[in-house]
Image 1 (cartoon, rainbow, N blue to C red):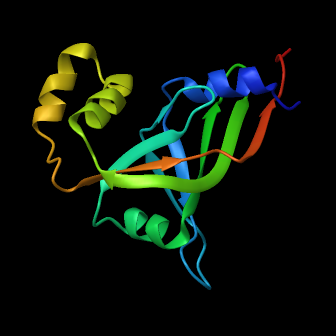
Image 2 (cartoon, rainbow, N blue to C red; image 1 turned 90 degrees about the vertical axis):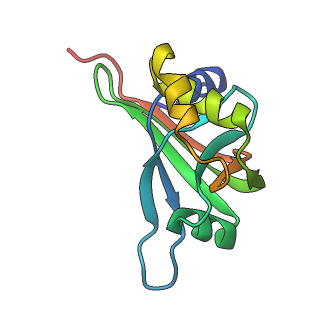
Length: 140
């Protein structure tokens, strides 16, 4: 059963690892890789990566990407969203801190941020415009 707008947005806002997919060229399947991301209901999806990475180059070329987040038990639920890149640029200290804070214990964030090279990171922002979602219901 599809999720309501508020439930799917709240689910996407939870700290989950996303599978990011982007067109990778004729005769190839889409590139599909795990990423940390940030999302606030009603807003844009943000993630960061090395600017020289394959995924960064493919996203810059395609101008859009999709992500999928899921929960496997109980019950199986997923949200998939696709949309255009609305902005990309150098990753700021705030971007890096915000995203890493979603996934790391509070006492590990500072060390992770300090050990990262902001000079090589780029942040992509996507505006969700196509959604798919479902919850398979209670398990008996």
